[in-house]
Length: 455
Image (cartoon, rainbow, N blue to C red; front, side):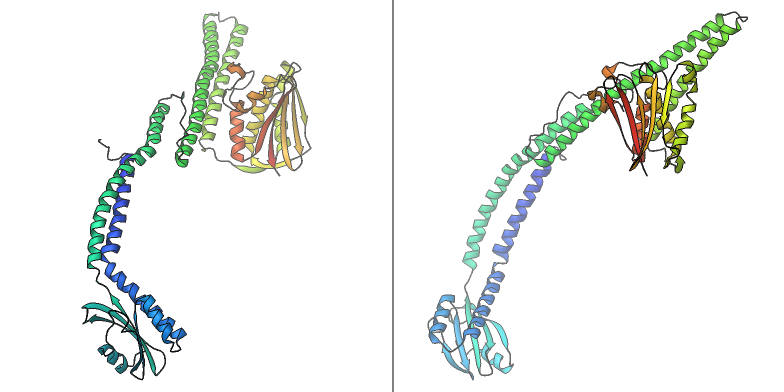
């Protein structure tokens, strides 16, 4: 099988083999190379521990000393004033004679304790001797033979060779299946991610691999796929609806411009009426383009907030004055319920745009009574409400109304005023302020949009 050098399968396989070889190398060092050193270290600790035990329990108990010597397979010799008063040398094989030079060295240098490594002349084996003073008169010598390990090392070496070959083969086989097991769901995920990149959303990332991280990644990708699908749908709706809003005024501008061209110059009243239509539709186009630019700028975080203290009641009253033409010509009623003065801290221009867009939305969807209600409530926070008396919004549609150009059942409606992306701008501005906002609606009883400003 040919593996791409960068494939996950190859990497998992490679690292598993490296780990296996590292373990084998570790065993070789400690079971073969350092076995003599470790054996000597263990024997040294053994005779030191035995010596300490004798020192703690010493009362010249011959039976106790014989038992300890036999169980530990060591030689014990107790010397008083350089004369041996106890020795297990006769009962334990491999003990070194008490006339050794190590004794002279210990006494002449007046040492408290010392370890000696000697060659037993009788058996031609190495031995360890540990000497320690009990008091000024008594010294304890403990002797342990270091058995030759050459045969043991040879056996271990041969055994490790066989074990190493078996382990490497098993690690290759197991590594292959483990790497395939881990990489398989990732490979499938990659194939589906390519479909996602091409705009295909008719699939689901599998999240049943029983590997937590991979399942979490699949869940995240499924969420991303859902969001991308919704965004793509909104993009298509936006293009269709913006095209609709652009096409209507452009058609009207073109039609009325042709009428002006064809009319006689002495029909000034008709010409002026047609020019007014052109001006109004051009203004609608201007508003649409400005709203799109504003939304794009805010969502790109390029529009920095310039917070200041201002009277939001005064701001609302000034905004309402702009709608006087709707009072006079369309019969709209604007009911304003506010305290005399409420000071808030926010970006004044952006909050003005929020209120303006919400009032526009209420005008577009209010009932036959043409009534729009604006409330400012002061409690723990300052709550601004804009209500209409229209048909209301279905419960299932409420989460989507903040999306650009969202309309119930996807039926686009030409707005009486505004461009259709006002609520999206409202959402973006309020979120940039970290203000709480929302909508409450009851069928055939109207809709209330609100936002809250912290005191």
